[in-house]
Image (cartoon, rainbow, N blue to C red; front, side):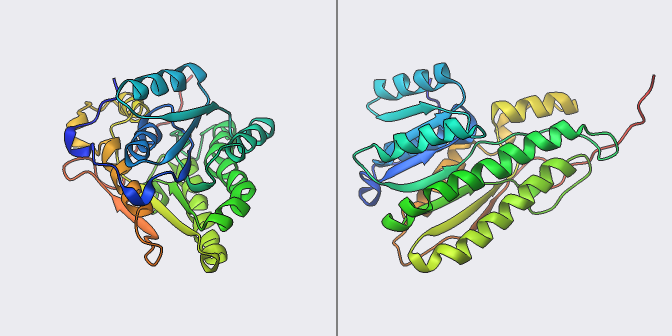
Length: 266
């Protein structure tokens, strides 16, 4: 099931028709919603994620409702996979115009005892991978006057207890976006960072379970909400640029959630 409410199934947007778009982390959650929304708008979408089977299933479901999405399974932390993905993007009949970074990793833990392997993974997926992939595709985006969208987190704005590693990675991602914007805006490339609060994704549901919270998706942002925001931002005329967007649940957890560090026993 593709999911989404009728309200979010917005019409084809002529200004996005045929624009090449690459969406990372498109297997589920926000990335999946963005890929589908851009396809509905008429973009030429390439969806990437680690799970070939899940991607192929999404493409099939999209086709059943008249949407075309192309896909390439890739681990964007792997240099060989990144290279193959970039080659695939450049081999398409439409030049890349939109790059959306939605792939991400999350681990929760107090700085006193959070494993360094968790830190390494989050820096690799949340910082290094989008940095390198963007670096590889800058020539393409400059040529088309494209858009780069980073799906960040409200933890990239302010950090609470228990999320030091994740927030550090997201703060770094914001810095990358800010520097990139300063470097490429004169060439006509727009850079937007989206800072979503708690969003009803499979990953967020696991986080709620780990925290012992009751899960109520209706109180959270829907992935389609973020997909609509992203699509609206890239559909703006070239003369206008949205640089940052913060979106939070109207009725839900606050911007910084509490976390109590407990001493380990045994």
